[in-house]
Length: 159
Image (cartoon, rainbow, N blue to C red; front, side, top):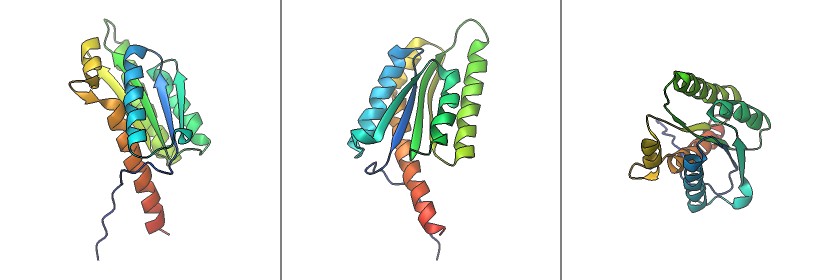
């Protein structure tokens, strides 16, 4: 018989780390608010959530690597906003941030969600941080809940 496994949407009893970039804090604070709202509404206890502030998006993978090495969380959520400027700096930061977050998740075996906005303008970032395009912080937290549940379910099925 085929078994189908997918993550649920209950955060109850799970621990979450949230790493947030201080750079573009006007946007990242809204992403954080969305993530916290999602976790709370899905049953996470405030005692099971820790928020870490780091300087910018480039540092998100570094902090995620250290945090996940401690094995204290069921999932980690990285939140940031990189807005294109007049130099190629945007491309370097976005590529390294995405690559780094993905690498940490694969290497540690803990879900690490990529909730980093990469937009052309501040207005686009604002639209994705609680505006008409939703809130990427909420979406990333919901993904973290689902992935944490999936990992737990996989662990039970593969014993």
